[in-house]
Image (tube, rainbow, N blue to C red; front, side):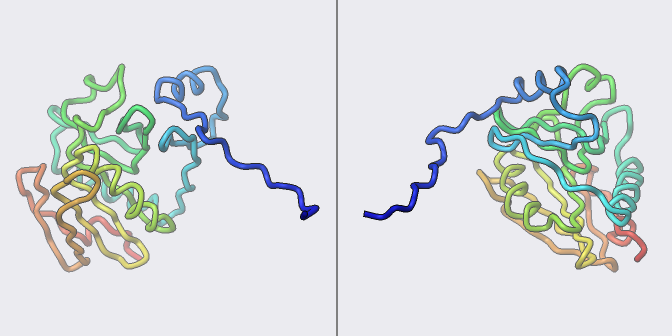
Length: 196
C-alpha cells in the first residue's frame, strides 16, 4: 500500500454564480474598483490588461463605427457588459446594440440587442477564437470581428449556428468589406488597425 497521501479531488458540482449574483457582489463592493472581471460559465475570471496598441486599435475602431451607426438608432459600447446566458456575462472590447443611449441607462445589453461584437486580440487570440467566438455564435450575435494585431488582419465571422459561425473571412489592410448591420456600407481594414 502506498504511503502517498491522496490529492484532494475537485468538487463534483462546483458553485456557479448567476449574473444576478455577480451584479450583487459588485454592488456590495466585493470586487476592487480596478478589477476587470467577467462571468464565464458561472466562474468569475479576470480580463487581460490592454496595452497601448490595443487601446490605439480600440479608438480607431470606435471612430469608424460611430461614423457608420447613427447615435439615434444605435449605441456603441466599449468594454461594457453583454449578457449572453444566465451564467455568462462578457465584456467585449466593443459592441453595437440596437437603440440609442437612453435604452441602456438602466440595463445592460443582452445578446438579442447586439448586431456586432468586436474583440481586439494582441495576446488573447486563442481565447477570442476558441472560447468567445462559440459563445457569441451560441447567443446568436450576427457578426463578430477579431482585430488580429499580431497578424495585422481582421477576422470577420458571420452566420451563427448553434456554437459556431458558418463563415469566416480574413481581411488585410488593403481590403475593404461591407458591414452587414450598417446596410452593407464599405469599411477599410486599414482604418481599424494601429499604424504600426
